[in-house]
Image (cartoon, rainbow, N blue to C red; front, side, top):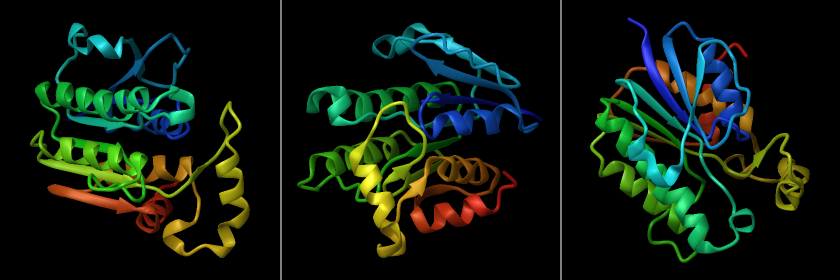
Amino acid sequence: MQQTTLIAGATGLIGRHLAKLLAHDPTYGQVHALVRRPTGLTEGKLVEMLVDYEQLDAITLPRIDTVFCALGTTIKTAGTQAAFRRVDLDYVLAIARLARERGAQHCLVVSSLGANAGSRVFYNRVKGEMEAGLQALGYPRLSLFRPSVLIGERPEFRLGEKIAASLGGLLPSRLKPIAGADVALAMHACAKQLGTGVRIIESAEIRQLARQQPG
């Protein structure tokens, strides 16, 4: 039986690759992409759903089997720590909660290397709080992806990513930059595997999962 899936963040570095993979995968009969504005995403069976993240309860979803979340911003883009927290913590939890209410059994979310609710580093602390919040939702299966610095084509210039990419060969495996496309491939592969409980997947394992995928 084909599954129905939900994806948030479908226009981002990871999400746009993931959306294409899901849209052309016969496993999924319907792929609903939450977007703030029309994007023209028409890949395969992908269906855009315009949404105000402040009013998620206003949208009507069918039964959901699996939810993917690649939603995220930066403090620079968000403007303030509070705005960053709103996107990377509140919105992510709201989406996961909504999908769970609609029957989702597996939640796959992009977090970050160093995620720790007790961290003194604001970014890592928010990611850790997000992970803890997701675990409290009671998903039978939760997959948390913790990539190191992400690289790939973005509309905006990010100096930190360029520096990390240039130093990649000098860094240990867990810290080497990783392509957003590889994270998407790993999430797609993970969704096809069997399992229960919480699984934390860092960069080395993300690369292994990505290599299992054909493209």
